[in-house]
Length: 142
Image 1 (cartoon, helix red, strand yellow):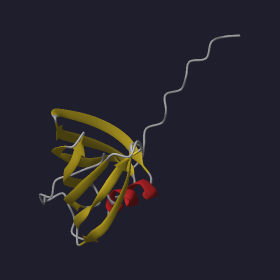
Image 2 (cartoon, helix red, strand yellow):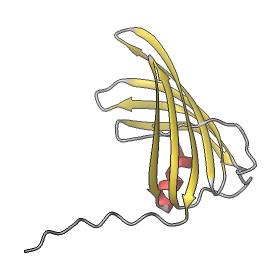
Image 3 (cartoon, one colour):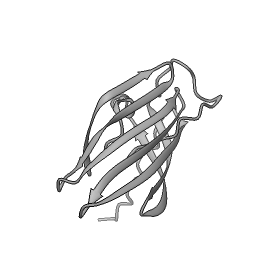
Image 4 (cartoon, helix red, strand yellow):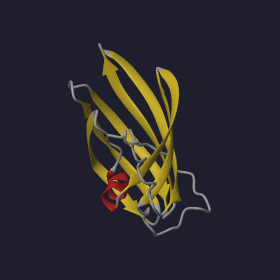
């Protein structure tokens, strides 16, 4: 899930949305266990616009009835439903600019009737305007 922390940084412009290109995302989650991932991804204009629509991924379908985006700030609250029907309430805040964004999120859910809470953060920055070319596969002689 894409999530982030709302601390302002000099790298974040007030009105400019994130630009397409090659991005690095550092995701940290605390939900029963603590884990961290670092991903490098090529974002199209549509992908970047999706960041401002709210965290979601292939595991969850999320809706955000409360969504405020503008002046380099983002605030969301809504629900995410996992493909097997598990529901989680989520709130997120963040800051964004053309070459960086930071989001933080909190979630609450119940598993087997037991209430659980977690938090996550994404700290992302643009590495390049262009994405690297896929590695050419070595072809064997025929």
